[in-house]
Image (cartoon, rainbow over all chains, first blue to last red; front, side, top):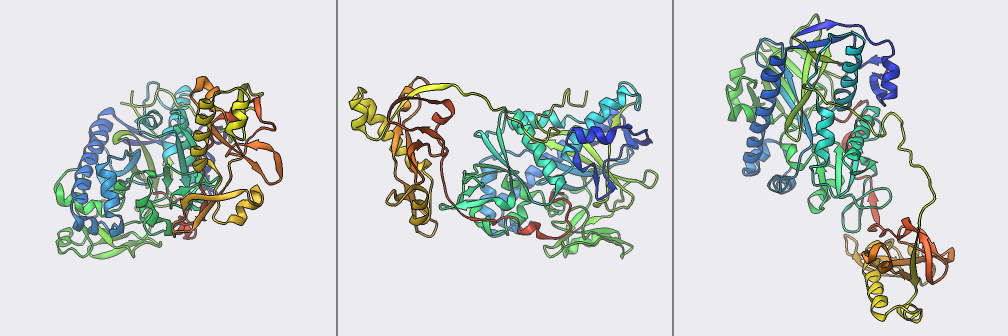
Length: 386
Length: 179
């Protein structure tokens, strides 16, 4: 694995706009960055990233199966009690999941280490599935990367294929919050994939969803919402006013309710408890668990629901060396062994390993110039080349 | 090969999914205000009654719904509304317009469509409309109508409250609500 400087395509911004990739630059800060790419060998991809991703997904299923049968585990994961039966039902009824993204630290030398699983509302989907793929095709054509270069990225085909397998009745509402161009881009892409599978996808803002006389969800034309893709986290739904209607409707959600058991960082201490010593896991404990003393003085304290590195604290030798701002923390924390991201010339890459219908489907890499990957991280493409 | 063989976007990049307007095909059908009108035009009693009953059944789902009678009458006219079988979540009444007529579904697509309810709005007492407010015809009896108007209307419900999701997103300066 190495990071190599490459020439950006001169017309990359025009290409981005033409492909509907409007958020390539955010608040004047570069987000999509093709001045470099990561190079992997096929063995590194298949043995060190793809296989562990599939294996950890199966381990996560064991965590879900345990949680739905044990209220104490549901409580430890912080799921509100009013939703325990709902979540368990979505699992026993096998509500299908579409996607998720596991974040790994990997340097090509040792096993990839799982930092967390964005199992409910993973982002960077479009740039991974589409724009990174387009970059490769053009980079090969223009000699920017070696002829015969490949990429671990069948995300687009996996998504368009999966929508046909999800048992959707015909209409799918696709929702995101107001005020985020990035999220709008993501849901437009999701809708596009659904339409390619013959599904009638209708976009709606989450704030515009209504309820009818029977407590069912409706859109702005008063049509019932039977299936809803939501780029909006379960933990917020569960505390929203309309959350209490969720268990009483027949609306199917993507991602399904059982994913809420995996999308909070409480997953990590449970994985460690059930699979202690697994090479791709980092030791992790709930904050307050006396067993956490096994971490010694080097650990990272993360709020259960934080995103983009918000409120993360790094402790070295018992001293807090990094502290990120944010709004999270009231929900409780977990502690994870300190395992810094690898340093590639002052750039710290996080490998986002995607699953579609629980199968590994590709990776997207985000790198930052600081150890806690945050909002300023840039998306950098990759190639497979020996 | 570890990547997608092709990547095709249907609508993204064009910004809008453009749908060309076109001249629609017309189909033969008939509409009536009552079973009696239907039989007097030569249709069998069985066909007339079956379509009427089917339309009445569909009417319950596809008629526009209101939580106040006055709101319903504002759209459909005084004394043109009835109480719907549905109830609000706290037991209140729901209102819907009276069925003004019905479309003979048995004449459409090889007889596989059910009878459809028709309505008339307060400000246009001559046009029969579907539950989705598509104008069908101005006179009873046999007629030719645009094919799209004969598609069964969507199930209607009345939104009584909106905005109950989104509280979690009201934190300032968040670029994305995913992770």
